[in-house]
Image 1 (cartoon, rainbow, N blue to C red):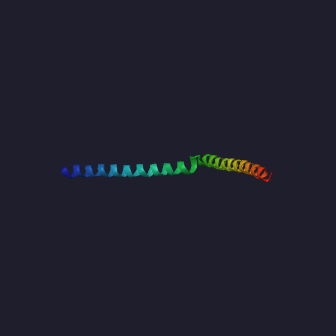
Image 2 (tube, rainbow, N blue to C red):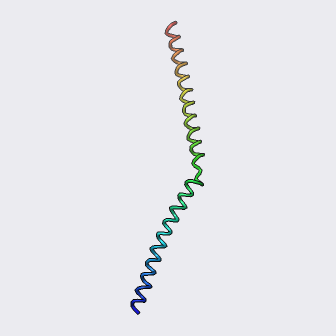
Amino acid sequence: MSKIKLDNYIKICLTIISGSILFVLLSIGILFLYVFFFDSTETTQDERYQQHVDQHILEAQKLDSIIHVLEEINKNLDD
C-alpha cells in the first residue's frame, strides 16, 4: 500500500508543478498579448510629441522677446 500512496504523492506533486508552470506561461502570454494589441501607448506618444512641440514654441517666443529687448538696448545705445 505504501507504493500506491507514494505514486499518488508523486502525481499530486507533478500536477502542482505542471499547474504552476502552466499558470506562469499563461500569465506571460496574456501580458504579451495585452502589451502588443491592447495597450494604448500611441496616445501617450502623441501627447509627449505635442508637449515637445509646445516647448519649442515657448522657447522660440522667449528668444523673440530677448531679441526684441536687445534691439531696444542697441537702439538706445546708438542714440
